[in-house]
Image (cartoon, rainbow, N blue to C red; front, side, top):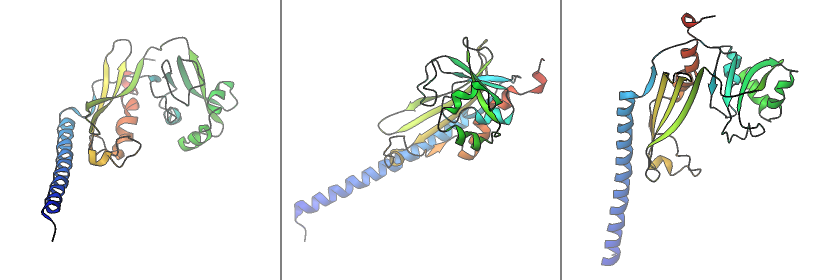
Length: 234
């Protein structure tokens, strides 16, 4: 038979475990509910206007940038903002704006891409023909036209509780008009965050855009907004 002190200690420990489990369950339930309401009110895709353009400015400086967009042929060029880039992939380029286009494999403008170890793998994954490469040219300044950007905003960010908004916009750099917007609210509970030792937040418990819809909804947005043939003027 347990001593009274040990018995009360066991009862207290059990109550603490139950309280913790209850809190974690409540937090997850609450967060999922908040995301569902936010997604229903203004999440997902909103296209306000369309246009026609042969290219656009992007702030994507990751190693996944640009191959697919150029290879699909929807756009003749992509302009990249590297004025404040901390990207490892583009670390050899001076700060500024650059234009990416497809070119013949022996084009000297492709030397920038060829210096990176991921070049061959990314080109093959994107289906880039063996005789083509991505040419990189410096621009004299910020290009005019349309810009595609994305940003993360913390909606609620208490310790290891992550309710964030990932927002993508396509806008006119001249007028400031927003042509299209995608809002993806994401919630990651403490229970999902803790196993992620990298502190990346774990897998989201709830979000507006599923992984299956991401390619069509987000990555396909520039083509849906900027390739309206009725808006072509030349």
